[in-house]
Image 1 (tube, rainbow over the protein chains, first blue to last red):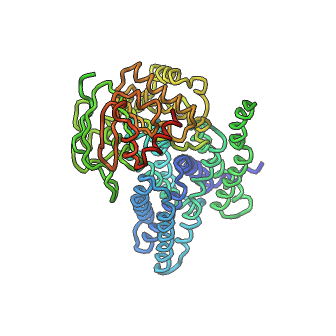
Image 2: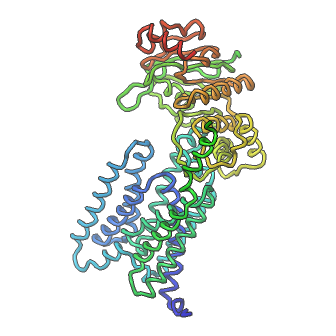
Image 3: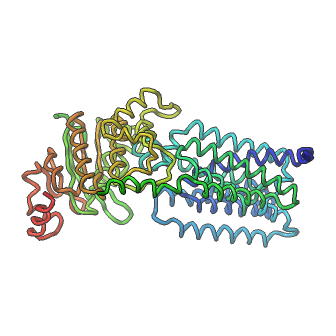
Amino acid sequence: MDLSIFGYQFMQNAIISTFLGGVACATIGVFVVLMHLPFIGVCMSHAAFAGALLGMWLGFNPLIGAFAFSLLAAAVIGPLADRGELSPETSLGVIFSFMLGIAFLFMGLMPGTKAGALELLWGSILTNTRGDIILLAVVAVVVVGLVVIFYKEIQATIFHRGMALAVGLPSTVILYGILFLTGATITASLRSIGGLLIFSLILNPAAAAYQLTYSMKRMFLLSAGFGVLSGWVGLLFSYLFNIPSGATIVVTSSVIFLLAAIFSPKRRVKRWQEKPALEKRP
Amino acid sequence: MGTTVIDIKDAVVSYREDVALRGVSLKVESGEFVGIIGPNGAGKTTLLTVVNGLGKLLSGQVWVLGSYLTPGNGHALRKQVGYVPQVENIDPRMPMNVREVVMIGRYGLLGLLRRPGKHDWAIVDEMLELVGMSHLARRPIGHLSGGEQQRVAVARCLAQEPAIFLLDEPTASLDWKAQAGILALVKQIHDLRNLTTLFVTHDLGALPMACDRVVLVKEGLIWREGPPDKLLTDENLAQLYDMPVPVVKKRRGEVI
């Protein structure tokens, strides 16, 4: 077998980065899937993209811009989710399109070459530096650490925010904590995976895990596993066929979801529930 | 009975433009079983949320279990107040089983950084036994029927070992048999533990008659309160629900 893939420094960096990014994104994904907030993640990743472009245009660190903008988005979106409005989708759609609009506005205003900006859009995991890896490692450790430490509070909040509040848990603080972590994860992975693609790495592994288990602990583990697997398989394809890594990672995660959905035991829920009632009927 | 555990004075609560409660005063004594009855939008649910500090007061005072409610002490109070909200749809794929959901009731008491131990699981299993749900303990919560989920909600509340038990239309949208089952269970628990219970209901059959006292709520005010047999006359209910007396008579006849 050709092991030359492990020989290059940039490849080693990419393998470590996809591991860390995969774990962090897929863990965040469990919140997004179980709390039914997919649109919020899309909004925040595009806000981060717009913030990074603002940084590039005005000449400050794009990551600071990305983090500030995703937190800003969380501050606007949080109250919508918290009030439990019937359809926050309309407001989210407006925020989403606004973020995309100003992102391209900043890109247009930016003087000179747009290569750096496009790189943020598509991601370039193969150029990850030691600094990127350290940032990803810090975020991954913080995300996983907080989930382990506050597992019961998080579990209750995911199950039902109102109920968690009614038993005396600070579920509003936890909701905003989750949004904050989402912003941090998106920011740290922005350069590697890219603003357009990051959200699939958040959503797909968790959505796949959601198809396969009725245990929340197992869902976190499966999701993280799928996240890392998507990253590594995607990298391999990218290396073998010389195609963009962000795209192969996202396509791999989508295929994993598709397989999970096809083989999901939960597809049989309906029939399984109806059966006893049918048997009882005279 | 005897000591006052809930004392609401002139509570005013508003959501956006609507005033949900417009100056409500109510005292509840320890061990009392109080039924709260009234039309939709009358402020019944809000009255319950005032007791556990989830409803935000515009003015007035609420004194519960020995202290006045302030914006800061709500979390501490809610650990002692069990709350069964209205039936809500639970995601059928939610990755949690019945036992884990009942354990949520103990999370507030456990406090941050502490994990449930053997003692907590023993209480959870005891409560599942009490509500007759032991055989479903390992089922995914989303697979249960509406009536079963309400029994689980009651077990979750009891796992909290509350001093006050609040129930918000726990029988709404359940079939007749499941309704009767939940009502009997709540009454049984009240009698067994002498637990102060506030029960919001639309049901005008068996349960209100079992209450020590009923409170009729209309348009954000307590319209009348007193013993159920004197208060729940066809004439009073006709006025409460804005329906002609013969219609109320006919409907109640059907229920009983």
